[in-house]
Image (cartoon, rainbow, N blue to C red; front, side, top):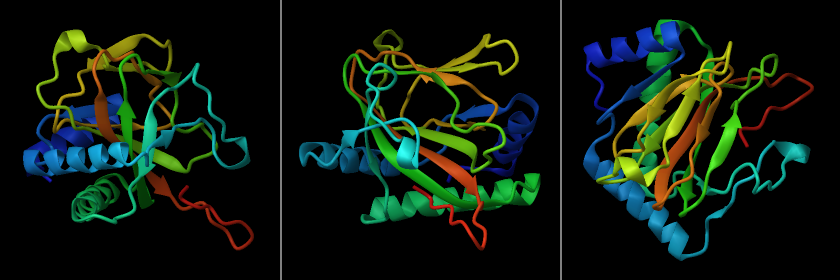
Length: 212
């Protein structure tokens, strides 16, 4: 991961003070290109599936809310393993600096076709602290501002818009899962990313907390 001590401190400071941070060129371009090729292979093979909302018994497909297609990363390719190692490094740094107790990381490819979107939502609800920190790595070379598909981040208190992030290749966005409402605006071009969550361990002797 392209994290110097200076950029790591910027990420940590902004995560604490503002709840989010966007870091350009966070991941080497060659790795981003290989991740993009990976998701394109899955797409051609029909392995991407419509994303839903909710988890477990509450999981459902709701195309009026989100229309992307996904495939969970399982380390089955070399580039997936490399990316998961990078995020393990980031998990270590977050735990070391912020004492978040992050236990594991889960992520999936997300592909938005023309016209796809994901309406405003939170990645985790207060009192259900499993997903603690969200991450999005964009895989889109030469993305143009008039293509749409921005990530819009809102203020938790008054839902005022605080940022629009272009989904440019190599850019990594990190934000607090419980605090930052966000949405993906309709895209005019295919839009690829790796979306993930650092999770705490909610397992007990009586109840397992699976990653997905």
